[in-house]
Length: 256
Image 1 (cartoon, rainbow, N blue to C red):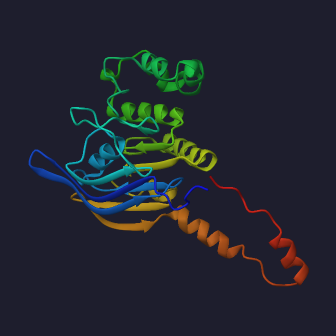
Image 2 (image 1 turned 30 degrees about the horizontal axis):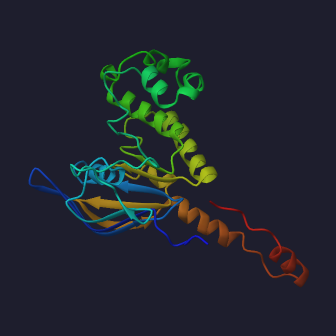
Image 3 (image 1 turned 120 degrees about the vertical axis):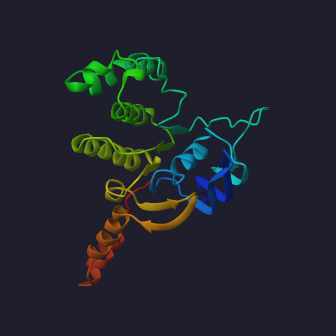
């Protein structure tokens, strides 16, 4: 039987220094599987470096960082080998500025090329992006395209940096719906970063605040409070023994 307490990410005394400046110094932090996390911090707070560490884009200087109970593997040069079950939205491995969206989609999702084109590029302002190289995308268009790739990736863990910062309201709401559905239906662990909780508090279960590389506080999100209140408000009143027995025999909802 699988250990239900097993963590998807486990951090202890994690430190990272870049250009003689310490960008990450986290004593202890844990991420549970099947949960949506929001990491919130201002520019330079360390949230992107934390994501790069989780994604295996960079290696820690010291401390412990485990994915699913195991340390990251490294090659003979000491570089981290990215884990195939972790998808990072801003990874340089798939956001090649010299390639078009068409070329990138074809290389990553060959069997779904036509589906992705019809779903995201067949009409409106995004139609012109299909055959344009990423070097000619605006920052907002890069963010949008990275989210398209992320949503279509179907990973075990999805890491999304700078969520919703440069998106229009309708775009953000659409991606929010897709991300929530991925988490609900597939049990995907999702970690998103942003400079504020404006969007993340609407659907993240846990909000992690980071400041100068340190975790300053961890709070439940609106989604977590909503579930708690819903369970409390729907709690049955004891009216009869038969009604209590019927409710006790109901099958619980399955959760991944």
